Image (cartoon, rainbow, N blue to C red; front, side, top):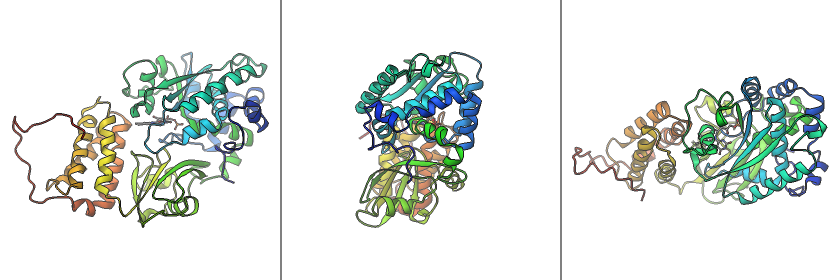
Length: 432
Ligand SMILES: Cc1cc2nc3c(=O)[nH]c(=O)nc-3n(C[C@H](O)[C@H](O)[C@H](O)COP(=O)(O)O)c2cc1C
């Protein structure tokens, strides 16, 4: 049985708080408030080895310790439920299937770091999640599990919902803070990190939905129990959304460290048609993984050793009918559209790479197009202002690394650059 995060999903009625309580719900919060100090909780979360499930894989206990030791007050908690990564819908199903589990994790975090106010930043399209969370908050308040004097202690914790307008970059934690404050959704310079200066310049702890959903079981069962799942370096499970050419696409929760091959053939029923060609792991900003890497353990450390990342949890499986140039054209169209425009390399670089892949797909690319793409991707990785621009390099560089030969077929050796003149220097942004 692999389920930690999804253990109640499909079993209890997510709109009935009594059913959550009947499944040991809010017991971890009671234990935390009555029997544990904030320091105890930080130690348990650190010992569990839990790392954030929002994409960056930062150790959760360490993050909480930074927010706890921040001096300014009030402090805030934000649950990042923006989930803008194409192909990722795990957080939506967690919130729809077990909203109280997320709220309980947030309340435990609030007690630990000394925050009494929390927000769930959620995209407007997630109507059912918003509806269920709103009901869950009201029901928990009625029973004294949220709101004032929780469990009869002097701990108050209020959760509010903030609806985002669906910009991809607003999932990045500092752009999210800007959006929360009614500012333009652009990333902020780090440092200062949100733990020191976040929402309204106050200490703020931002965690992903799945990260919060792991907290109550860790407090209830202990760090050693959690470490029995997954690998030594990345304990626990991971919720993935599986898409593409597989027989059973959908949502799975599996131990950290299982391979792509196991995911495709043991969990997703195998290929629905054709032969496996490649997978994109981690959403549109994820790396392209070829068949030679089908057996690499999917967890942060093993992938990092190969220069790859686990990302948000979307896995897109593609067969041999998919052209790498056409696929990258789609990815880059997305990035060119979503770039907030704050830094030039992201604003212009994503557009130039998009145009280049489009030409490669039409087999009409400039003789030096692959070199130009590589230079732009390297520059994005090194100099883009925020992790969005930097992450654009992942699909591009991995595609060049593993599918360079196929991409080279799109180059027209006779196509040379024309000298730039006032007449042909067309910078009109046309996405067609
Ligand atoms: C472009 C971009 C989009 C992001 N979108 C999300 C998102 O939708 N949800 C999320 O939890 N983290 C997202 N992140 C990561 C957050 O910045 C942050 O690392 C995360 O919310 C921290 O939570 P965690 O430590 O629990 O993973 C995004 C990052 C980038 C660069």
